[in-house]
Image (tube, rainbow, N blue to C red; front, side):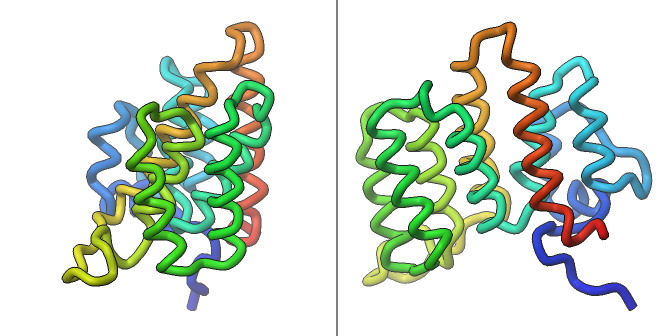
Length: 189
């Protein structure tokens, strides 16, 4: 009997597409039958749209791990981010280290109030969408769709990648996917 994955939602890309059909709205590539998630993600790097590797990686992890991966991607290009991005990243890192519904809800409110949606704000939105409810604690809960946190992480990482100079962009994208590989390693051993 196989164990439950620690960091990944599923071990094959096809299982992930079946469980989260919204991924098909966000990317054109489709996995082969029984193709492992990292095999598929690496293949995306050499596809006509290599940025789809980010889109897929943002969804392949469990939500908290996806948020940490997004944080680390943004940290990798920290010099391209503004003070508001850094402030949001700090709050996201605190939530990943110690998940708390009150802090998550406050972070969501804070991110929604920002007039400009830079990478750090998108990451904070993804974090806000990773909780038990989209509504304030004093109101009836509304569960976020399972794909929503990943979409926030995807927007954060792609927005950060867009700030990288073109000659360095593909190398940066490869570094992002290498970080994803490291986070997925416990499930791929």
